[in-house]
Image 1 (cartoon, helix red, strand yellow):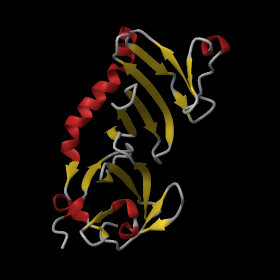
Image 2 (cartoon, one colour):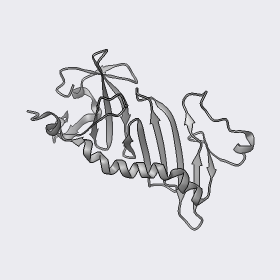
Image 3 (cartoon, helix red, strand yellow):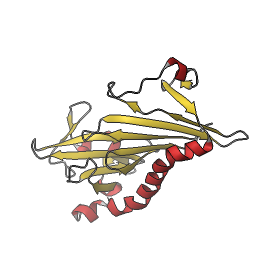
Image 4 (spheres, one colour):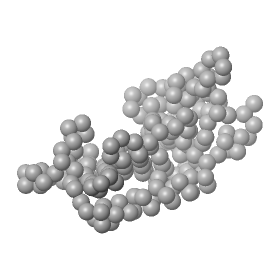
Length: 208
C-alpha cells in the first residue's frame, strides 16, 4: 500500500484509493502537493486488539488508521483523526483535548474494531473567579445502551444546542474523581507513543 502497488478501501465510503491520490497525505514540495513517505510519522501497534498491529500514518496533525483483513486480503482505512486536538491513547481509544475558547474541553471516544464509535464522554472546566466543572453522561451510538435522562434531571442540566448534549455541574472533587483515569491515560499515552513511533525507513528500510 505504501508503495502504491495496492489500493485501500475507505470504511466510510466503500471507495478504493491509492495513497498517492489521497489528498490528506499530500505534502508541498515547493512546486506541487505530492505523496512522500519520508514526510510522515508512522505508529505501528495493535489498535483494535486483534493481536496484529495496525498502521497509523500521521501528517500535519491528522492521523489515518489502516487495517489489513487477511480473510478478504484487503486494506481498510478504518478511522480518520483529523484535526490537531485528537490523539491516540490506546487500543480503540481516542482523546480530544482543546485548551482554547472560554471553556477548555476534553472528550473520550471508544471505538469498535471497525473504527466505528461506541460511546463518548465530554467534560469542561473553567478556572476563572468562579471555577466551573461540567460533565456529560456517556453517549452511546447503540440506542439500547443509551442512558435515559428524566425530565427532572434535564431541569438540573445545561443543554448544549450545538452538541445536543446535557451537561451536569459537579464539584471540583467530583470532577477530579470522574476524569482522573482519562488524564492519566492521556499522560501515559504521550509517554508511550514514542515506543510505537517510526519513520518509514525505521519500519521498512530505504524508501528509494
